[in-house]
Amino acid sequence: MKQLLILSGKGGTGKTTIASAFIKLSHARAYADCDVDAPNLHLIAGWNAGPQVTDYYGLPKAVIDSALCTECGRCKERCRFDAISAKDGYSIDPLTCEGCGVCEYICPAGAITMEQTVAGELMLYSDAEKVFSTAQLKMGSGTSGLLVTEVKKKMKAASTDADLAIIDGSPGIGCPVIASLSGVDMVLIVAEPSVSGISDMERIIDTAGRFGTKIVVCINKYDTNIENTERIEELCEDRGLPVLGRIVFDSEAVRAINNGQSIVEIDCASGREVRAVYEKAMESLFA
Amino acid sequence: MRIAVLSGKGGTGKTLVSVNLAAVAQDAVYIDCDVEEPNGHLFFKPQHVQEERITRKVPVVDDTLCNGCRKCVDFCRFNALAYIKDRLIVFEEICHSCGGCVMLCPENALTERDKVIGKVHKGRSGSVRVHTGILNTGETSGVPIIKKLLAGIKGIPDSTVVIDCPPGSACIVMESIRDADYCILVAEPTLFGVHNLSMVYDLVKLFNKPFGVILNKCLEGENPAEAFCLERAIKILSHIPFRSDLGLLTSNAEIAVRKDEQYRALFSNLLDVVMKEVQCEATPHP
Image (cartoon, rainbow over the protein chains, first blue to last red):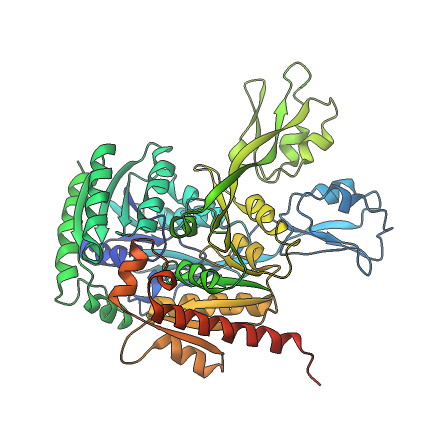
């Protein structure tokens, strides 16, 4: 299975819009949304039947039994995350606790235990032809990287014979992005012609480059700033990265998305340009 | 007063709002907590920048002392240690710096060193103090940098502090809003925008923060984000129109309020509205 991951560094450049178009064009049999902090692909994926939902457990978090606690303060002293408060007896803030287990180990009274909590939901949509894996991290939970890994695992396990998988990534360069990069064959970076977009694109190129993953670029909303579009093209040429195409800013695209459709389902300029980018991306991926 | 600006979805205009709010305030500190992709400094182009490197602790093994008991490997919940071919290996990228392995090693074979994960830049742009956190590429968590950025504002209580948050609603966002007096949620009028607005709405409620919404990129016609706010009686602080001149200024990293009187008026008015909201929250209800 060839895996194509769509990233951008900066948020709001059009990752999900392009991912949904690619899914439509390729009749993808396997796809996933790895933006577990703010997933959106399910909104336009067009599944009628509901998903199979499983609870996602992050790392267990520490809980203090106040009946056993002797208030010696060793846990608070050792906690590197400032998760333990001594106000009105000792207690642990579950939103700050990272689940390392140091307090449980150090407690001389055996008052601290590590307890499993649901940190999110994995959702798997499937029918005879295709599989869509997505998830939603519960508010206030960490460990989004682990959940990203689970989303990809679920997709792969459910679609053993698909030859292409399209994965919608998250913005940024940190833990969920790094988790989404492992094992993919090519990254498509959706760039945006703003000074911010260029800075963010360079940082995601550096991040993906560390994994030795093949990188290609497309420029979305290119006509909003032609000078910056040309700068992106020069920058990619200097780095030896192929630019697969430019996509115009198109208010029709917003209309399609708000109707729960991908932009290749209506006749519009951006849809035609995405199609050209898609064809080049497939050539590159299967080259 | 500390105002956090967040959105859930990326690209809705957090930096646009944060930068312009700080630029119209009399005495402001702008703090860029989007340490994975910091952009505010591109707008402010701060002068006299001082750099501080940010580190976290990672374990170091003394192979001559390690006897291969694997107690550390069993303890580490992040799987950041492995004993392979008679050697203890540390995977620094996934280590959470909890110090557990060092604490429990019976042979004292583990110590810690400071690993540089990024930096904080502090500079000035006109009357605005600009603090930027920058995570090194390849590093997984910017939380220590955000903690450092926010620890630095406690000593300056009289200024208007604007905290530009990362997208999403995960740990890194929670850290950014923890000490805020007020949260501004920036939403765009799309299906995606509304879905992500609903998530940060849950987050600010979870943290019990007073908040209001700015509707950005407003066009004629229906606005699903506005409908969301009206249904829940959420305070709408401002409507920012979708306009190509504002888009162009922003895409060239220009600060709109420093270039155009009408945007200065729009953001001055917004700052007044936010100030009133905060004061109203600070007054105890009878």
